[in-house]
Image (cartoon, rainbow, N blue to C red; front, side, top):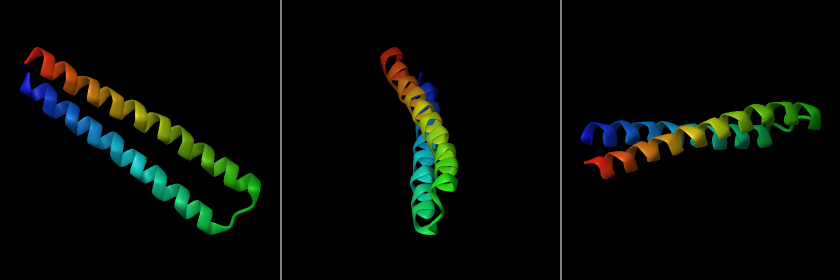
Length: 71
């Protein structure tokens, strides 16, 4: 079950990378000085990616835990 641990770890890292992208995207948006409506529309994209990244990271961590229990 060691392969399950490594695959889960890679999936978790991908989720964390997605969270990092969200942070950088929002920081760039804040500095851009856009009007309120445009800012909200672009922030909705970041929120969706943020939730997806959290889900992917959670699935990866669940795979790691399952691999540890089965191994």
